[in-house]
Length: 112
Length: 113
Image 1 (cartoon, helix red, strand yellow):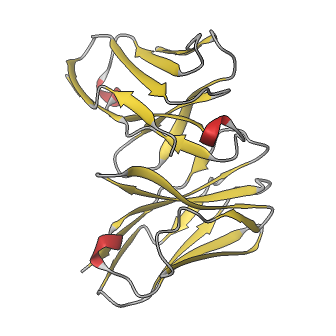
Image 2 (tube, helix red, strand yellow; image 1 turned 30 degrees about the vertical axis):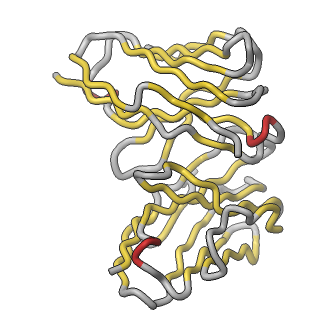
């Protein structure tokens, strides 16, 4: 089991640029979650998918953020245009049947 | 929104000491989860609790689901340097579906060899 795979591990980009974060969930897991972690706010749920369908995106901070899950093995989180306050660690997690999540190693995003 | 209050925010202890941390919720939970995050990695599930009063152990870790269903406790006995990390409690959003979890702000544990 390769676990939840996120890429890239680190991303440094200039303000205004588009950023795409990628996630491959564990095979057989039917739910996928995107979280953002900052010192100030801790772990915040941005959006989650069930069977590839977005169920709740109420945590997405602004229209600049969008997420897709075109199939059961791939999801993206896109920020366009990026801003310095988007700097954070973004985690993807997956689960099956409401069991505890398995998190990826995260993408550390720095927007300068 | 739903609040999970975790305490203490940080702890600095000597190797061999026992550690206790807790988490309280503004609403009733039917599940409590405890995670540990190592530096540079994602959180990893340590213990899951599903019933009020439940006491569950995982090696040197012991967690309890509070009787009121609004709190949970995690204890680590005889700490070692690799216990260093951030410990998070988590529970279902609004006490409902286990699909959507809310996390506490975490307890940062430092162990001095």
